[in-house]
Image 1 (cartoon, rainbow, N blue to C red):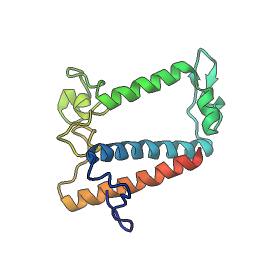
Image 2: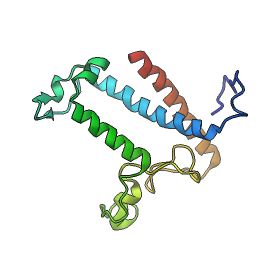
Image 3: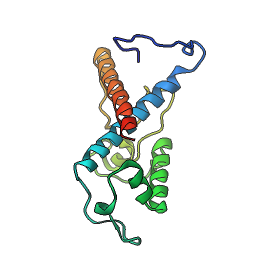
Image 4: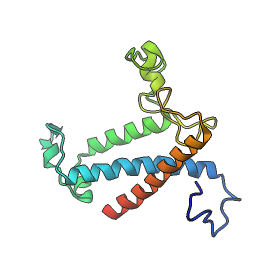
Length: 169
């Protein structure tokens, strides 16, 4: 997104030589991850913790995990990291969407609403706008002006969160 006050900043001239759609998709995706990560750091520093055990076999409670970025990374057991990576890969590829999986009838699509909503998101495809991975229950805007405003707001918030999470490291 070309946003004021900077306009187009492309000192190397990459816009003309590269597929910018891929970079738009990555910017939205990384911005969303950074927003969640930054919110996580704010909540952890404020003392918010889940009750119970993070790893019952290791005897590790959520409250026992240190609040520092790198210290908390080291405290998490390897099996926990594997679970995070598997869920992330499933969300990235849409592998969590099983066509015949029944879902709650309150979601879009009736008895298969959970799948149509995207249990772990849907894969990014060429026919969708960058970042449009949420399935049928995702909020969409028919007005092009409003859609552009909302996407630019998300991009700006994502960019700020990417800088914020980098500063927290």
